[in-house]
Image 1 (cartoon, rainbow, N blue to C red):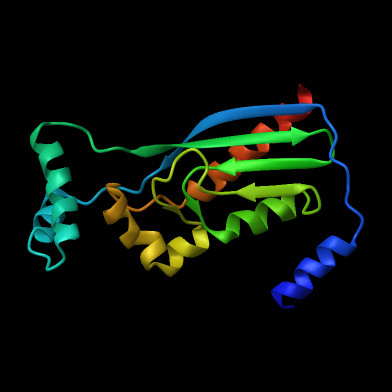
Image 2 (spheres, one colour):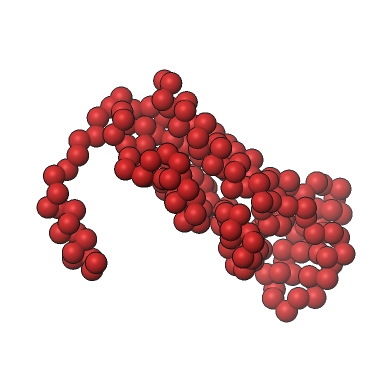
Length: 174
């Protein structure tokens, strides 16, 4: 369908009302990282041709030199806003991949759920387990540019989805 056809389809259908009450919940969800690279692996990256890779390695080597612990997780902001029983908006920090939308709509109901990324913080791509297995930019390389120590652990998807379910449950109880 072309853009004009999609717009026509929307404006010719009767609009649905969205009623209250409005209920909201927020959480900071620690998304787990995998084991970080060793000092030796970071040191090897100092010789990479990419200056961003070098800068990333230097940052974490400097932390190690100061005896600081590398982050084991990232605190991802997640919100749920429920508008009566008509609409639920889920707002997730980071650049969440589309797999989250597909899974959450399947588990929570596609008709009344709207999932949005880039909400309250943009700290990295948030890969699904599928993306982690595929590798590539969204699973690995973006973390260099975002300044994260390493890729997310496979538990990242279930951790985030479980948190969304909990927030939805909390908004239903208010």
